Amino acid sequence: MHLSTPATLLLLATTLTAQSPTWTQTSPAAAPGIRRDGAMAWDQPNNRLLLYGGVTQTPSTILAETWGYNGTTWTLLNPATAGAPRWGHRLVRNPATNRLLTFGGRSPTLSGFANDTAEWTGSTWSTIPTPTAPSARYGYAMAFDSVRQVAVLFGGRTASASKNDTWEFDGVAWTERFPAHSPSPRQDAAMHFDASLNRTILFGGRQLELDLVLGGTWSYDGDDWTQLAPANTPSPRYAMGTVFDSTRHRVVLYGGFDGEQLLQETYEFTGSDWRAITTANLPTNTAEAYSGYDPARKKFVLFGGFGGSFLNTTWEFNGGGTGSFATYGEACSPSEPTLVPALTGGVPTVNQPFTLDLTSIPNGSDVAAWGFGTSNQTWQGLPLPLDLSILGITGCELLAAPDVLELSLVAANSASFTLNIPNTPTLANATLYVQGILLSFAGPNLFVATSQGGRIVIGL
Image 1 (cartoon, helix red, strand yellow):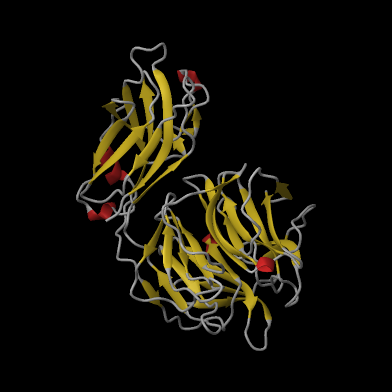
Image 2: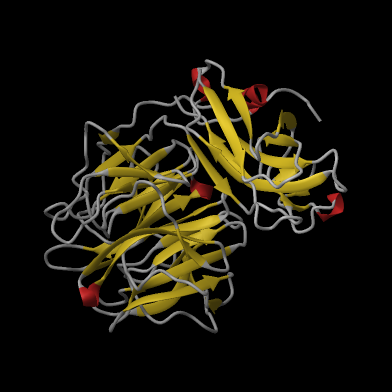
């Protein structure tokens, strides 16, 4: 179904103007007082970031305050039911209900440990009674898996030890999961869910009892944890500010502490690799800062935290214009399981040719059909991934909407396709999805194998 060209599809995709990556300190008329180690997340119904809890410096005081930030003004909110005082907690949003969820932390006293579950309804805090729950802890990592509709919690620090257990909350009860593999015990790690790659990403942290600062990048697919091997990676660190930039489909990380010094570095994880981002201005909010992503203004907001002393400054990061390519899902080769197609691509950039390659193609394949689309969630009203057993490739799935099909010949078990990206700067951050399907015109079956899906984010 050759409706257009992939380049034309790009023009139909969401387009945005990219700028040079910049950190900017803002000057809101009012702001919360100095504080660290609370939580912040996007409050969609009220079009603002919501800040909750934390701890002050001298005298150390645990906070129960709730603040809203609309990009111009910080406003102290007075919900009918205030949240419990807490710090060392996390806050995530359920996009289906638009409610924010938190768990435990140090609460209700400065040195206490809690395992209660609470949510922000849009105007007030509400405790959720749960029949089961993780043990009381703080410094855990938490992300919301919007595909499976569960909050995922990993690790943290109890009164006696760092943990590496995995829990999921479905809105009613917490359930402990027992994956075959797990990251080592840690607290203060970064963790976010990437919906279009359908996986939770975790980086860094600290194992307090061993005085061990950790690096490493892990992914969780709902069944198991897998340690990734990106070519580049930030140095080990913990307590950094992080968000998932849903506009540019990447985890953004700032600062952290490496056990010896506070770090002033910006990194992005594109789904396949980490990149160091160079900017002129650097926040001093380097550790235990509040961080949240504002999708309306497309800004990473960083507030408070520690940078030699406690802070209450507000900084914003507008992101960069570098493109990215990442794979997701599973390749499939029913007739030859030891020869599974591998999909790779470079850095997609405006006014540059972008080449996709398929290697390790099963024997007997004649042609690669490249399906390009603007979604990997639905196609023709059908949810993706879609079982392709009806085509004779049992166990394989359609991972990207094939709105446009392009063909290329297979030679020496490989095939390539080059997408000529137009010289249109507004294509920055436009996103396409692609999958390769291998065909045989001589074999007993027309359809032979499928590649992983690929996510193409155009850069400048």
